[in-house]
Length: 217
Image (cartoon, rainbow, N blue to C red; front, side, top):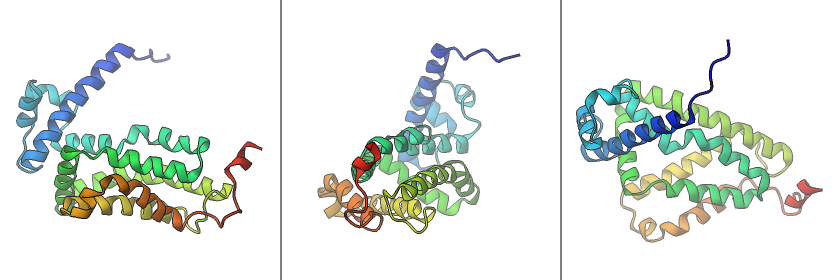
């Protein structure tokens, strides 16, 4: 027997409640840190009962992983990468980097600081973060880097290594920003173009080997 299609209105209400809880958790974790924060703190900030949170998240660790998935835009990554089919690869990479960095406002940067400090000392959380957030993202990225390489859009001897180097560059500038790099803070608007140029310098084929209009022939 086929399962009934989920009620779209109910799905919207669930998504709205999850986001309400995650918004509150972002604020609480950024203010108190993961270890000191409690589910009650999150519930109070969200203006809901403690028990309501457990309807959506099993525990505090699940709540943090939910935040990390939202910050990672895990549910949207497939659509983001699919846009590369319609764009010149250089334009796609620069737009993608700009979009990702725009997700890190003041609250998100504080949350990133909390997350980094916690995953370095919490083995269980580190393993869950890698298995549930990073590994699926890398697996998806590898497919596209392999496809771009086969199409001649990029030159990459190792499509599995390339997305990890790319992610490392993005994480690196975010860490420098967290450490108070004044130059980056002043010139933050220039970072996407500069970072994309550096990433592409080792990936773009020699000039003349690939023309994006060839895809339309």
